Image (cartoon, rainbow, N blue to C red; front, side):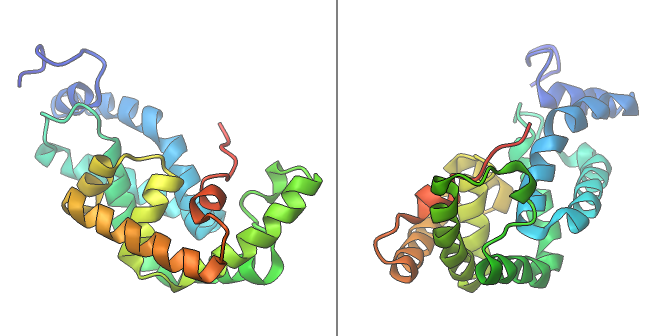
Length: 199
């Protein structure tokens, strides 16, 4: 597919143009950096997020010549790079989840949340969820959080993790099953996806 056949403003056209004019890649960064930063910060904490996000876009820029230009949206590709880079920080992620489990305070979202009664009761459920998330295998946790916190679709998660959609479904089913066992009657997806979105 040539650049003229794609929508002028899609990610693939900016990536292709960046092969000739490197500054064109800045548009891909502008479109996706904030969402990836929120996702990484939620998983690893703010300290690690800046480094992982910078490395994500540096890696993407270096690999842009291998990007599949038939894919107009670079979002799954970028989340895949970020998720792979976060693999180096698994201990930090598990530590972050254990802190949330112990204290009930999420240092990433705490400054943005009000202290209403609903929030206080949800905090208790989130503490249990954090402990349960920490026990999930990395691939299961990646799939679950890419859907719940990054808002990726199953096909986008499959692309991000370089696995088949059936594998994503399987990982999500196993993760949800384990979380339901850990949390009793609490719906894990209601807790996982209720995190506030900060624009």
